[in-house]
Length: 278
Image 1 (cartoon, rainbow, N blue to C red):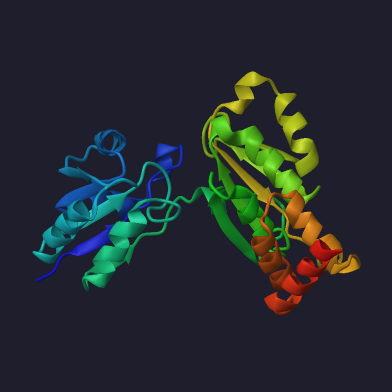
Image 2: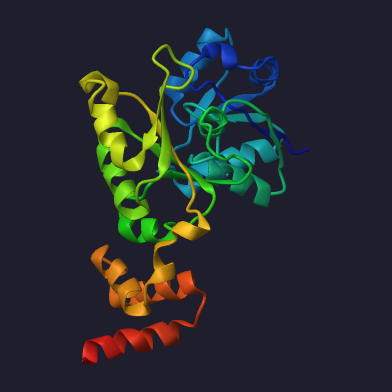
């Protein structure tokens, strides 16, 4: 009889946030799949739990994932944990959950810590509709940001300390001066919220001293109000030029303008080509 895969959230900084159900589940399963076995092992030790651990991470090959799935299919139960927060949310555990689901294994999620929702709940920004963007991609970042520049929902981004100022600059360049909240080291002793705008955020962070730039960060940005969508008062050539200036190719700029205006890509491409002929 097939076993079960439990998705078990782990604290994002405060050990007291481990639920009783999470502790009971970790104590009951046959083995634990951890993003980093050193981090996972330390958590289990602090909880007084001894369990075999296997690692999974973004570079885990399909063979190892299949091995974990086979163990569960043979009847063993497994808890998947990440270094901090909810597994499979902006986390390589997504691959393991996907493989288990496709194999017909029962996947049981436990509620618990999630940095994105925790930060949003204290942000004061609209929370009825929001989208989670996680870490910005290194490749194709300009195109990625141009694609979400007209997003009306509140947006949630993650940033590592070494990338913080670049993320802030890229967000402000692509999204303009919107209200934002930066959350640092949630649930930890140095937890802090900076409520400002994107164009002021970098200076606000620097004014707090070099030490403030260390830690894990979440940036929450308000969505684009209908009246503030930049292209409503400009023509297609100027709209195209906006994306050219962001570094998009002619084809990608045409695709984005067509998406913004909800018109055929061929219409936009024709205007772009006419501009080159003039």
